[in-house]
Length: 75
Image (cartoon, rainbow, N blue to C red; front, side):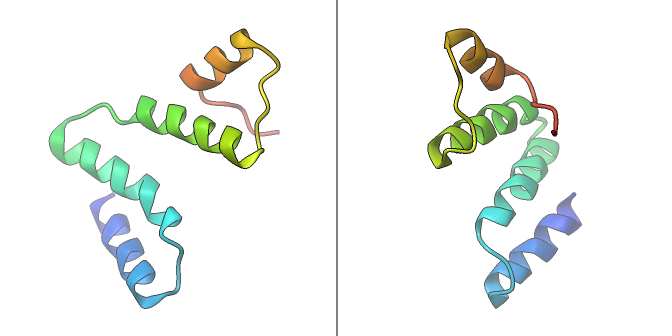
């Protein structure tokens, strides 16, 4: 995970990758190094980002809560 993060950071610095591509590996690395549970942060953040970009459109409070707490299955 650390190696992937360093490699991705190099790609971002070289202009071969977008900064958004570095977020997930950096979050995982931080969790591993500091012993933090970053999985839930990733699930919630990803869902909020999808709502912001229009990729997700929850129909009600229940669907919103489910999306914030649980990983969504790929279609």
